[in-house]
Image (cartoon, rainbow, N blue to C red; front, top):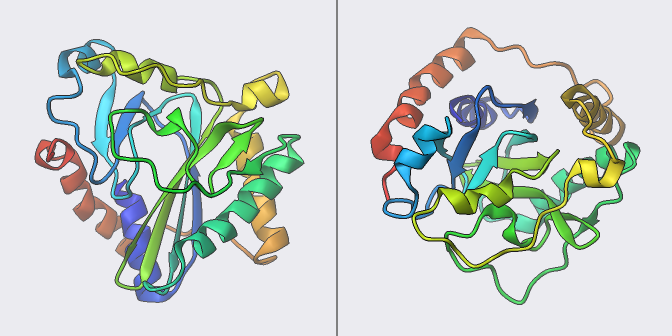
Amino acid sequence: MALDEALMARARRRGDTVLRVYGWSRPTLSLGRNQRAVGLYDEPTLAERGIDVVRRPTGGRALLHHREITYSVTAPCDDTGALLTEYGRVNALLCSALGSLGVPVVVAAPASRAAAPSAAPCFAEPARGELTLHGRKLVGSAQWRDRGAMLQHGSILVDDDQSSIAGLLRETPAPTPRPATLRDALGRAPVMSEVTDALFRAVRELVDPDAAPLDIDDDLARDAADMAERYRDVAWTWRR
């Protein structure tokens, strides 16, 4: 989370656009920036199951990072620009990359209104502009804009761990549909490098043929280290 925010600051400072793709060393429940969590999640159960908790700088609902692939896009932006325009640009990359792997994703049609905040997991239902497979949500995304820069987070499910989020709550919520996964689409779980390579190919084909790997310089490393203190702070994680 800290490196993603540091990349957002870099985009604001230098005008860089970066696609980052990564996994998690431990199962981690990430909470949306403004999602209520205090009193809803059973902290002893989280600890017993070895699940860490972090609060994202982006919005949305709870997401379990385990058998999934996380991406972030950081870029300069116009704070007054249409949100779906930026989503559309990122979706073009995701659709191209996943399509090249044989995953026929579809962009969810706009709903009449946004989903209300709740304890339901992120993958309970697709929001407008998110990617689905046969009507079920496969890629969840959320965006944050601040002072001329944007950060978009997203998760591509390899297997379904999201259905287990209900068991981390103090009260069991209403049942929700099972999300789609890459295993559903391909009949197997692709390794992370397959998806990463497909995403980076899409960047070079659709956006910049000269796109190069990121150099984590001293400024970026220092910014990330400074910002990490907030994401380690339980006062931020459990702030609401």
